[in-house]
Length: 273
Length: 273
Image (cartoon, rainbow over all chains, first blue to last red):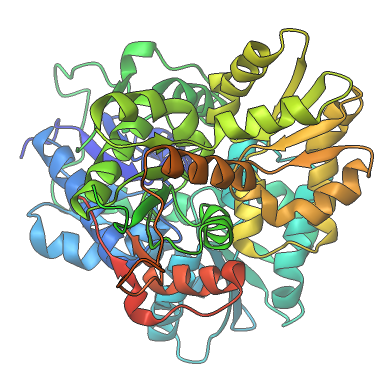
């Protein structure tokens, strides 16, 4: 596989754009092909079988587009389907959960860590597993926060109602004396400022989107796949997005997260049915 | 088609159970086969093409199960795809929008009607269309309330946060002097008591689930399809549910809405992929 091939990233919908933003900053020489499954979003309340089936379709699609490596920019897919994907596809694939857990294990002083995510990710117990494997003395306080995704998608970010919902979900785990908190869903970093305010400065927020982009760079280097645009002609590096529904809505949400508008031709519709 | 064949009902997920509840009360002699597309829920933010494609698959499935008539127990599908379904399938099919609009037009004294629903239903303008066709002097004040569905699914029903969100969405339309309000999404009747409290007793809440079940009975009668269990052997009348994901979660939600537990064998998994 040529090192100037694109990298692939995918998510259940728009949340994975927080990972794309990190990738663009940390891997400025890479071209990104992103798939957002906006027709079947959200994945967070769905079963392992359903999520794994969708993830397999999307991975196959990205492979058909010639990507050299894939980052699963979705905690739910990383929690439920990463091992399946790795055994079925023959290219480097990383998720967001393991790098996030590793960073939390490094950040904690008290070994009391909070994890917030979708119902499916929390139900999988995967953050606990990774954290305990790193350090068996760590205690994990997990909480599913299913309203955070629709709140973000509604755009109610700097909002007193959102603050009340943050407190409703988080007060019980901050009362446990945690000193770090994993934002275990790619939408949640968009609420980071309000969550920080609600939990106080004594708690370190861990953003798996940031950690996993660093890890992805390392994996590309290890495999001799890091692109070096200075070494000759590389095509246009602007990212290409495929979505299964609502290209216009995706474009306007992406502009908000990435901080600049996307050309219309960079957001395309692709469905599996 | 035999009048003792079952009737079909479907929704994007669990909200259509409010229609099933009405059907069981108003049509006690009918056996119901219900499909809830829990793997692809919610439909309310999706495009017409996507929703119509899903609705076509589900209608085909219900027809293959031998239903004699179908009620589309979902406002979004009724708004975006009912005409397509009626022209493609050769059996009586009714939606929830038209009966709901008709009841609202009858209820209003001031000709000022509020409509709340998903983004897709509001965006379609279908309630306005039906209301204006009934009475051109009616003024419609429409508002999409995308957080109501996840709030209901989270079970936050008698809840001060839900009350704040109800006020956030509804205050601008109650300020317009409406005297009736259509609950244009099958989840919303579950918030009926709180919505009534928020808008005050002067506003009549119209529940399309109730109105459309009445209409469905009339359509069955018209077509000579109403079942009369007293006329000989009819099989077990307990409803059968098919879902595309999460049968267990559906079962416990259904028990809450229908008021009694469902046997495990009455909730089956069926997917289209």
